[in-house]
Image 1: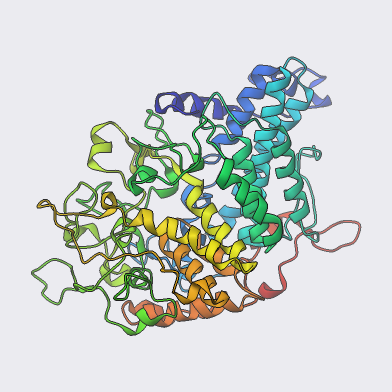
Image 2 (image 1 turned 30 degrees about the vertical axis):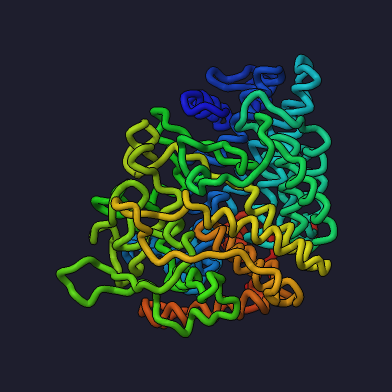
Length: 590
C-alpha cells in the first residue's frame, strides 16, 4: 500500500468488495451456487486482508456505481467550487449538473449530490463487511487484529465525516452491528457522537508505525479526530490533540511531521508520502486505469499536460486574493476586490489569451494556479488552447494536482477508464499545513495571539523560501513575488479579530484548490451568516469577469448542508410502523 508497483495488487484485491456475500437461502436447499463467495470463506486472516484492502480502495477507485469525480473525498466540487476557489470550467453542456452547483442554484435531484450520498454508504458497506469478517475470523494475530480494527474504524469515521460535511449530521448511521442487506434507518439522530466513538476506537487500536506507508497510523487518527472536533466547533477539545500531533506525530513509516521546504514535494509522485503527509490517498501508475479518477476531468485542455477536459478553473476571486500590500502581507478586509485584477483577458485576439500586471503577489499564487505568461511546472508557458472555453470558465488553469514533465518521463502519468488523464501522484487528505492552521485557530480563540501567529508565520516562511519562487529560464522570478511574515507589531498580535482574519486568509491561500474552502466557511459561521456573506461577495466579484455569474443565487445562511438526494428519499420510502419517511429533508431544503 505504499509502492506504486504494488498498487495493481490493491486494485485486484478491491474486486473482493464487489462479490456477493449473501447466501441464496432455502430455495436452493442450502447448496451454495457456483461462483459465489460466502462469508464463511472469508472469515480468516486472508479474507480480512482482502476486505480491508477493498475498503481502502474505495477512497480512490470507481466502483459500486458511483463516479469518483462526483463523489471523491478530495471534494473539488463541494469544497472548492461551492466554496468559490474555482468554477466548473469546460463548456456549459459538459457535466451540466455542476452549472447549478457553481451558481448556487442546486436542487435535490442533482446527480452530483446523489453520487456523494452513494459513495458514503457504498464505502460504509465495504467497511462493515470487513469489520464483520474481522470479528468472525479466528486466525488473525492479535497485533494485526488491533491494527485492522483501528484502520477500519478510521475509515468509518472518515466516511461519515465526509457525509456530515456535505449533508449535515442528521444522516442514517449504519455500522457493522447492522447486518441487514437493505437497512432502513431514519435520519432523525445527530450522528456526531457515533463518529467520535469510531475515531476514538481507531486511536485506541492503531500503532504508531505501519509496515506499509499507505496504512493509517494512530497519529493520522488523532489528526482526523481533531478535524472532526473543529467541524463541530469544539475548539477546546481539538486544541490539545492538534498540539500533540504537531509536536510528536510521525508518519506511518516513522518520519517526524514537518513542513516540507519545497512546496512541490507535496504534489509530486516522485517525492510523495513525505513528512508533511499525515494521510494520503494512494494512486497508481499500474496498468489498471486508476490514475486518480477523482481529477480525471481537471487537466489543461488540448495541448496541455493531460489534454482533457478543462474543468476546475481557479476563480478570479481566488487569484486576486493572492495580491499583497507593500509589506508583502495579504489584504484581510477584501480590499483586493476593489483593485485591478492581477491577470486579465488579452484584448488582442492574435496574442496570448491573458496578460498579467506587475502588481505584487504571494508566490503561492503561481504554485496553486496556472497563469498565462508564467511557467507551468516544467512544461513551459501555457498555450492558448489549454483553456477550453474562457467565456465559460475564465483564464486560469488548475495546477497542484497536474503531473510534471519529469513525472511523466518517470512513468507516473496514468489513465482513468482507458481515456481520461490521470496521475500516480498521491493526494493528501490530512496534511501538517492544515493541522497547523487549525491549531492557530484554537490558539487565537483562547487569546494566545502571538502563539497563533507563530503557526501562521511558519507557513508563510516556508512559502517564501527561494525554492518556492517560480523562475524563468534566465533564473529571474516569473512575476513580482512578495511575501513576508507578520511582524510582532501587526494588529494580529494584539487584536483577536484581526488575528482570526489573518488565520482564515492564510487557510484560503495555503489550501487553495484543495477542497477545503466551503467547509471552512461553514464551520466559521454562526447560523451560516459568515458563509453567506463571503459567498455573496464572491458571486458579486466573479460576475464582473464571467457573465454567467449574473444568474447566480446567493446561498442562504440556512443552507450549511446539501439536500438529501430525492432519489434516496423515494427509495427508502416510509416506515410501515409510523407511516413517516425514513429520510426527511433538512428544514432549509423543504
